[in-house]
Amino acid sequence: MKKAFLVLIAALSAAVPLFSQDVPDSLTVVREVEAANRAALTAFAADVTVVDTRRVPRSDFQLWYGHLDDRGWAPDGNYYPAEVEKLFFARQGADGTFDIYCTQPTESDLWSAPVPFCEEAASPGNEIFPMLSPDGNRLYFSSDGLFGMGGYDLYEATWNPQEKRWGNVRNMGVPYNSPADDLLFCDTEDGRYSVFASNRDCGKDSVVIYVLRQENPVAVRVDAARQKTLSRLAVTAPDKGYPFVRRNPGKTPVIPFEEMVEPFDYTFQIAETGAFAENNDLPSGLVYQIQLFVVSSKPSVNLLKGVRPVYAHPQRSGKTMYAAGVFRTYAEAEAALAAVKKAGHRNAILVAFEDGKNLPLSKARQKESSVKVITEEVHIVK
Image (cartoon, rainbow, N blue to C red; front, side, top):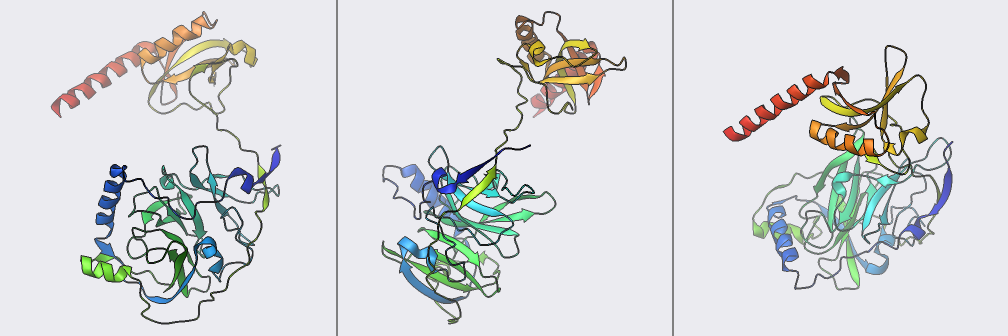
């Protein structure tokens, strides 16, 4: 039975940083990278339709997104919708930067242990303001650490239903992004508007919220003059239908998470306590293992003498052979064998498998040698 505990998200992280910090002039490398990124991204631009704008205080700009829930914004800088199937939020890690995590309800009335929502979205900087599209297939967020134009840029990740994972992270480009901070992109449920904020044309105490007609314009190659015009985001089709209403701030909710379960470590090691492998399937191809013993009943962990992981291989005789580690070369296995014997398994020997089936050690070494020769010859030809 899984254990559970209450986690207050605010206790796990400070409030998300709303705007990027000034980069010291001495960090010329950072500025050179930003300049190169900017040049690559500004070669293309999307011709969006701006219908309205509103300048608001930067200290609470997210509260002016009138289509979002009242009291949905918490002091930790995250948005907690009233009813969701999945929850995305930014949390500060041990290195001091913010990353986006995902959790969802489970059958036990708890929420799953938070996990990073997308490996492609991880960066040395901050990822904040995750907002799910109404159809649930896209997640928008801001980052100051991914490939961008400077400051915070807006990004989009796409849900892959076949692989059941988030990926295809892309910079949304011009005019959504600029050398300034561009934040908090989201779509309205009614399909009319897209909204985001930027301080590209403001003083230090404010931002402008841009309301766009909800569409999916294709980015095309543009010259510098056209790019500059599009980046101004002037209202071209006035429409006062978006509700610029300042929402009330809410409280950071207390969410009951399941206990985080650490994945089993299959790295060969000799530790204080040995461990049996959770999955006894061997990887495909040629591998070596260290046979510890063959017995009729499962041994106790103490008999492993600190060796881990130890795989169980049933034999035709009805007994079970227990073997440690997975090694791709004979040299690696031989070095580990010495350590295993030193730990107390004096009768340990090397065994080999190919695609999960036993293979005589002599044939395994021949196969390994032939593969090495072919690889070296190919390398020489190249």
